[in-house]
Length: 269
Image (cartoon, rainbow, N blue to C red; front, side, top):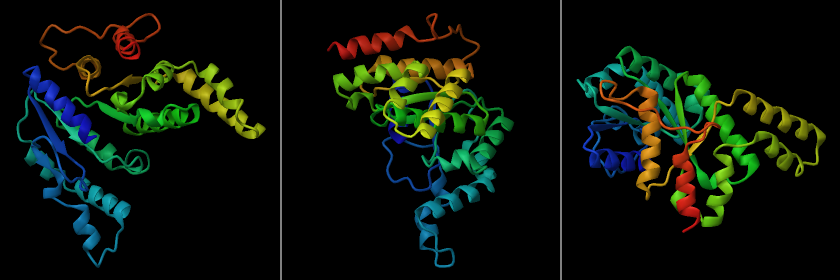
């Protein structure tokens, strides 16, 4: 998440656009960008873990910190001050249970909306994790679970595209606009258990029926890739609505030609 924030900060600054970052990860260490607010000024995981009366490990300490934060939103309000039309990135912890099992992040979203923020979730998945069908299905379910829990628009991104080989990039392209029924065939051919084959078909059918999860490639070394992601976020939150704004171009099958161009450029290199 911090790499994403760093890349976006540099990109927005190059565009002459006001951008702020708020660190909400109490276990964070170093940043390559300035932050306007840092949860570690309120509470840190290391301090919680060192407290002998609490006796928390890393995960328990993180949950404790986030619940403490949820009870002290006044600190965040004071730290944010008056941001007006600034684009604010909230760098959040990566533990999925904070978004799917606990109410903390949902409470944060609701509080930001009460403060009249236009909120969009950016769900990051490591592209190196998504090159196999089963892992891809797992990633989609995680993204869908977070989307349903938070009840906000969500942009789903495959990160670290710059670390993939040409062959892997070509392979992963099919996962950006997947044909779930073809994926069912690929997946079930591997499975021996009839029960798991049936379960996999049902899950793929559910994903395809709702069609709510699509991924964008994010290559921090490619300005066009960064701009594609930013355009989709801008459209979602209607950033700069007083300016002339154009919806991101989509082809008939709801796949961005900009994404096609990214893969054409990088696979043929």
